[in-house]
Image 1 (cartoon, rainbow, N blue to C red):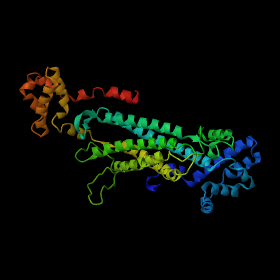
Image 2 (tube, rainbow, N blue to C red; image 1 turned 90 degrees about the vertical axis):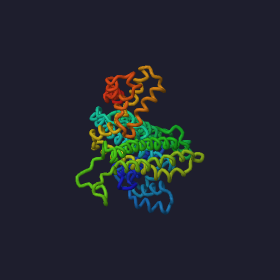
Image 3 (cartoon, helix red, strand yellow; image 1 turned 120 degrees about the vertical axis):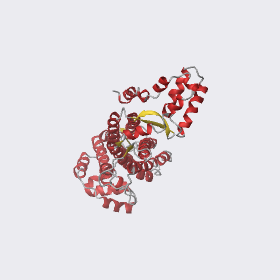
Image 4 (cartoon, rainbow, N blue to C red; image 1 turned 60 degrees about the vertical axis):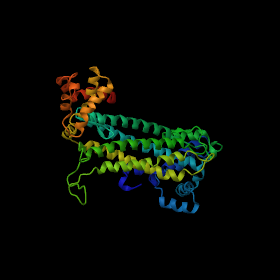
Length: 434
């Protein structure tokens, strides 16, 4: 994790202190149920909570033990015994390391998902607010980066809102799928631990039980989780890319807020660069980078191996921390985005009315021309305007074949911007349900 791109709330989930606290809770809840079942003395479970619930686990001490024993869970249990005393011999009865590690990872990923969903909520709120603000702000739509037909800036943002609404659903689904507990012992047969212990631990931690853990929670769950994160990152990049394009000098329809005292370049004092959107693009790449390793983790050997372990120690914190930061940054970018309706109008006029070519084409077909002939006539008048040789409307009015079917008044009516945005309210109702 890079501190520059880490928010304290998310980083805390992945801290050693947090991890060891979750490990303790798993072991303590399991001890409670085992005591209830008569597997261990009730006194042992009571003392475990009394001495461990508020204990400060010494990360350095655990690391020192691990350097000797070469096993992280044993190192923790050894340190826990130093805190709890003789009753610690009843801890971890019938469990295996993966029971602790995998259940802990489920808790961490579920908690991370909660923060990510909150981040998406911020983005959604910002997009909705700005979409309604600019619902009727007409701008040019582009396909292949080239002027196409008019749309509104609010409609652009409404489209992103719909996409991030899907992102939220994916994160909620991923959270549900990853929120599973495994406490089934070696090779997952429950030979030395009662299934009731697993159910109890799951309930206490807000998880469900893994139907067949085989000693590890199947990694298709984790792959789906990281795939969901990768999709959210791609949505972030798509929106960031739109902002970067709109901020280009030649376009300048919107730009990131440039604060007082901010400097854009060490060499050129005039620069106002889309640095936040560019940063978001880079962060999205880092998140997506974690998806393929998660997919490759699915194919473990037999009932368990640890080829996934080193991967998850990296991608778990990295993907969630980077995506959490990116979502919060994106929310801020949208909230403060500076929009230039006058620049949008200037760009609408840039091609001399060519954005209305389809309306003219359709009107000519309605007037009796074949589509092929109508297309030829419109293109014949459009290409000179494209080259800056007159305005499209004037070229149409000067063409006898066109004016034979369409009067000047009809041609004028075909250049009405309002025609293109007459269904914006309908689309908004579909997106926002209002």
